[in-house]
Length: 298
Image 1: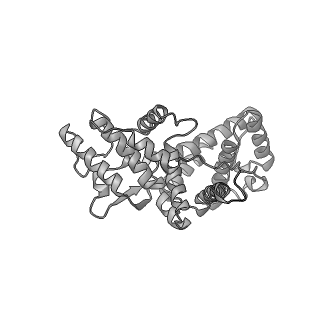
Image 2: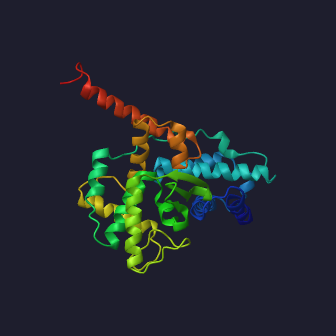
Image 3: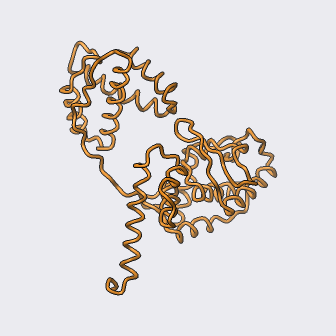
């Protein structure tokens, strides 16, 4: 049983090039399924699991009060696992294929309007290393649409100030090139000056964003920085660092950017993931229409 999972882990890491966090999530999902089977069976063989057992597991997850998105992810993990077993010749069928998956709830992501973004960034007064770093984080978020994890991995060698492009490694270590604007460029250069004054390395192999001790900043650290500024500006209410990424994509779409370009900039594997911003763009158009059309005005 567990050798099958070990082999699946190797497949995810080597062939699919998934990150360690993603592999851990898959493993945790499979472990939870095994624990469920253990409570109901004395003999467990993952290769002979039936769709009835999968259905019973889904019922258990629903009764446990698990969110629908979490249930769908666990079901997706099982589907991937059994597809892998079929490829390896360990089984001949995928029991998950006989299950009708519940529809994934579709929520439009929140985003800041341009005025809000400008207000947030301009209220970070640069006066020392800490404030220079924090403002640069916001400027880069909005200029590039990076994920938090991508910001933490950014090294000085990844930034080309002449061409104004950044090489970033996204999910699964997939590389992409993202341009950045003059505001982000100025913020980065100012931040570099403060780092040099503080004796913090700015050589090619050093990390761009560091804490005040000069160590690479963590994902949690960036979240805390963003949350702190949003709370100070009374703009938190459900919004987070990821909202800045949504804002970047939404403003591009509203400005007429091609959806495939936005997909490439965000590092989305599937175009369907990017299409959520089409809905946001449409909602924005309707709002502007209602405010602007003489027959719609109150």
